[in-house]
Image 1 (cartoon, one colour):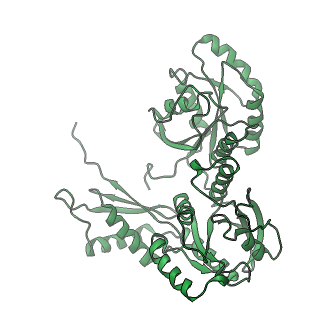
Image 2 (cartoon, one colour; image 1 turned 180 degrees about the horizontal axis):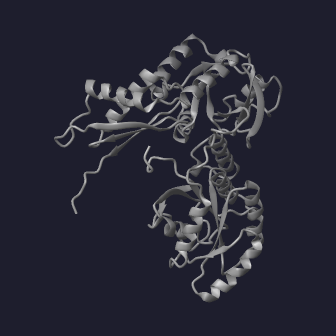
Image 3 (cartoon, one colour; image 1 turned 180 degrees about the vertical axis):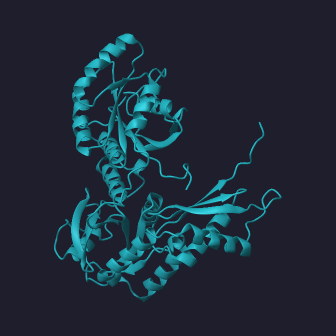
Length: 444
C-alpha cells in the first residue's frame, strides 16, 4: 500500500460560530473550498477536505459553530461538531482573539478534555504584534500554547500547521480493530417500521418506548442484548423521514444522531416494512449505510401481515429496488410474533465476516492477472490499459486499489467488483475498487 493509499489521520476544526473556522480551513488546505461569509453559522454540516503539509497527508473536517447552549437548528449543528470530534484523531480548537475566550468556549473545552483527544489551540484574527500579547491570556484555558494566526492573511499558519502535525498520529487509530466488548449494531429504518418492537423482542423485555405513532424514538438507546448465545450492543435510532437538509427542529437533530450511531457501529440492520412497497426513504437509509462503509443486513419486518400476493410483489421489488445491494443478507421477520428473529445473529456474523475479509496480495495479483487475461479492459483512446498491480488497501469495508497504465471504465470496475464477490464472497459488505493510473516519467 502506498503512502497515498494509506488511511489518513483526521483533524476536526471546532469552535464557536464566526470565529473564522472555514477561513482557517481554506488556509490549511491551501485553496478556497470552504464557504466563507461574514455572518455566523454559514457552515452547518461536517465537510471534509484533504490537506498536505511537509509531505504528510491528513483529512480536515470543517464543522458548524459549536454552542453548548444551542437551541433549534443550532442544536443540530452542535451535534455535527460532536460527531466530528468523536471520529477525529486530533482537534483544532479555534478562538476569536479579538473577543477572547467566552463562557461558551470554556464549556466546549470541558467537553474536549473528556474526549482525551489531542487539542491544538488557535488564536485567530491576530493581525499584528498587539494581538499577540492579547493571545497570552489564552494560556489560562489549560490547552497549552495558543498558536496565534491570521486565517485571513496567513500570519502564523506555518507554525500552526507544524503543531497540528505534531498532534496527529502518523496513521489514524483503527476505529474498531483493538476495541473489546460486544460487536456494535445500528438498528436503522424509516419511522414506524418496528425498530423498537424488534429490539424489545430480541431483549425479551420492554426496553424502548413503542407507539403506533411514527417518530416516537428521538434519541438512540444503547441496549446490550443476547442474540444467538452472545451479547451484542444494539442502538435503536430515530427514523429518517426525509433528507437531513430538508428536516427541521428535533427531526434534524434525530437524523444527525442516527448518522452518529451508524458512525459508531460496525454493522447495520436496516428494517423494512414488508407490508408496504419499498420506498425512497428505505433506499436512502440503505444508501447511508453503504456510503458510511458499514456491513449491512436487510430485514423485512411485519412478515405476519404478508399474504401470497404481497410475497410475489416483494420478490419483484427486491429484484428492482435492491439490486445494487444484492450482496446483503436478507431476512423475513416479525417482531410481533418472533418469527425468524433468532436468525439475525447468523446474518450479522455473515456480514461482519465479509466486512473483515482480506485477500493476500500474492493471491489477489494472481487472480487479477487471470481475470484480465480472460476479459481484458476495454480499449480507451486507441490503447488498452494494463493492470500492473493490485493491493487490498484495507478492510472494514474491503478496499482495493488497482495500479494501471490507463484509466479503467466504471463498467469494468463494477465487473471486477462482481467477480471479487463471486470468487471471494464479501457477503454483507460494500466493496470499494479504485484505480491509480501510473504517471509516465517526464524528462526535465
